[in-house]
Length: 248
Image 1 (cartoon, rainbow, N blue to C red):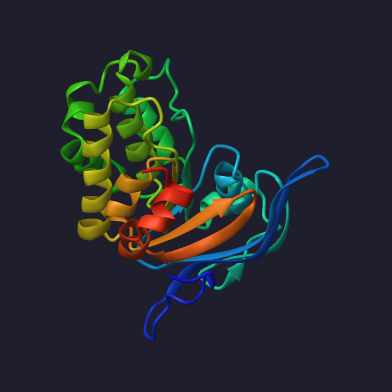
Image 2 (cartoon, helix red, strand yellow):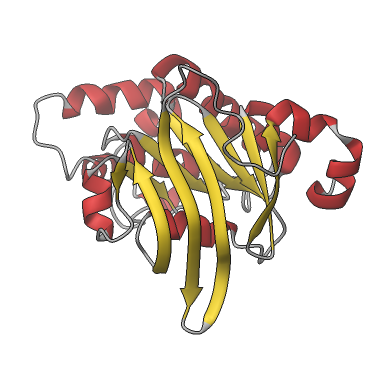
């Protein structure tokens, strides 16, 4: 376990997202105070911390949604000054807190909306594939998204994000407001997507035990600073860390 966020990268690992000295603020209030973290190609990384630690802000900063300084590199390219829609086109998909589906549109139309940056003939194939991954969405394809349960809406938000074929999937508090059994199923699906499809994920989450169960790497954020980093196993296996930072 380490406070050096770059320490987990061995030789032969390819860094997809590399964040250095990242500061972010809302007006005069500085929320992130120069944090460093990185996500390797093909891994699941998690950012953990209490409410108000700056977790959501970290994802918003990567997406260019707030005032930031420092460096955010995606596959070696600096994106910190890019507009959000440009960052999406460069391969970052963001599933915001509260899911962010279009409640009045059908499930099928939500899926199509996720492919808006694409212009190819494989969109229908991808929709079919995600209906296979999330069978309930296929069953309810004609229903308005607003009629789905919370867990189903979260699945739709993830499937819709995957329709852009992102290099990096950002997930903000995916367990929020969901029943424990639904949350467990969702995290199992994330692990399968990562293992079978090679989807790289950065997950911000308060449910530390569940998140660390599927993550290769974790960061603990406290008051806008990263106080600890390590493998999922290291962080979840250290009783003092769990008691001090992770609340379980």
